[in-house]
Length: 145
Image 1 (cartoon, rainbow, N blue to C red):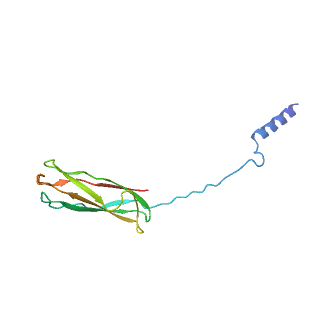
Image 2: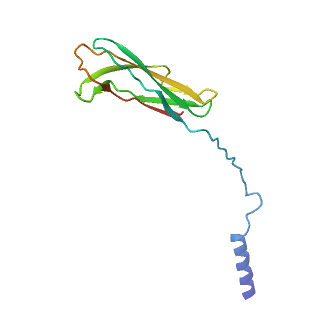
Image 3: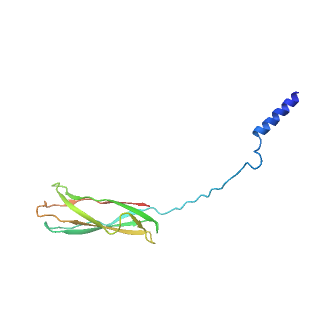
């Protein structure tokens, strides 16, 4: 009787913890891929400099950026443009408007991984605009799309 109980226990253990029945196992292989590309760099090539402007005259200047990264990749450009330039001494403002040479949305880097990006600004100081130096900043941010 004791031997029968041991044999029954062993059979139960083998059934409960033994190998899976034939045909109940499956597998799948997942491929892993990674594409490594160059990081983006944004460089100011030429700052926007209006030089000396006479009150009552319109002036236009162009600032130039150079964007570099992985050839053929698409980039998204955003800019922070001021609406006025500020005279740091008198705190007076001078209105400025902008035009860009390319779309600020989606652009492709050329075969060398480059994309020139120019911004043109226009100011028209009135005859009552306080004299002095006016300043502002443009921030260009670029990211891969």
